[in-house]
Image 1: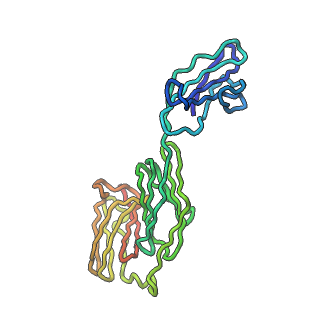
Image 2: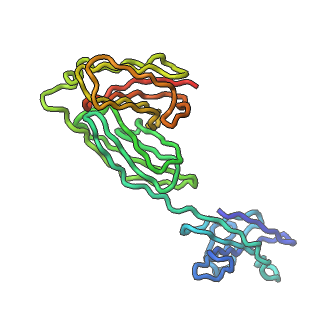
Length: 288
C-alpha cells in the first residue's frame, strides 16, 4: 500500500500519476503506470481520461508484484487549471517478499495409536495443524521452517483428516490440501487391554513442579522403551531411550532442563511412554 498527498493553492481537486518500476530511472519494460480515477475510487492505466481526485491523502494498492526491489514516484495535476504536472516526488523504494510455499505433509504411523506428521515451509513463521475436526488445532510459533508433530492416543484402524498451514511475517498464507491417514490395526485377536497388562506410567511427581520431576513407569515384560517430554506445541523438551529394559519398575529424574541445557519453558508438558508400539501419556505442569 503506497500513501501520498498533495495540495492545490486554489483548493481544486487533483489527479495523481504514479510510476512503479524495478529501476530508479523508470525506463524499463516493466514500468507500471497508474492514474487516479477520482472520488468514486480506483485507478486506471496511464492515458485514461482525467477524472477528479480529492486533494486529501491518497492510497494505491499495487497489483501482485514479483519478488524484488521496486522504486516509485508520484506527481499531481489540477485538470481544471492552466498549469501542467507538478514535479515528481522524491523516488522511494520498497521490497516485496518471496512467495510463501508449503511442502506436501508426510505422515507415518509408528504404532496403532500414533502418527507423525512432517512438513516444511519456505519462510520462518507460525505453522498450524488441525486433525480430526476443527476442535483439534495446534500452533507452532516461528522461526522454524521444518515442523514435526507426533499425535498420540489415536484409535487404531481409524481414518483421520488433517491439514497444515503457515503464515509468514508479511501476512502471506500457504495452506496444504486436506489429506488423511489411517492408523494401522492392532494385532489380530489381541485386544488393547490384553496388550498392556502391568505397563503403566505414573503421574509425574511433584506436579506442579518448579525444578524437575520424577518420572516412573512399570513394564510387565522385558522390552525396549522410550520416554519423551513435549510442550503443548509438540516441541520436544527431553527424551530418554532404552534398547532393552528388564520387567518391573523404572524411574527417571528429570532436572527441569531442555535438551539444549537451558531451563525448560514454563507451561503444560506431556510425558509420553512408548513400549512395544503402545503409548501412555501423563501431564506435567512445569513452573518457573
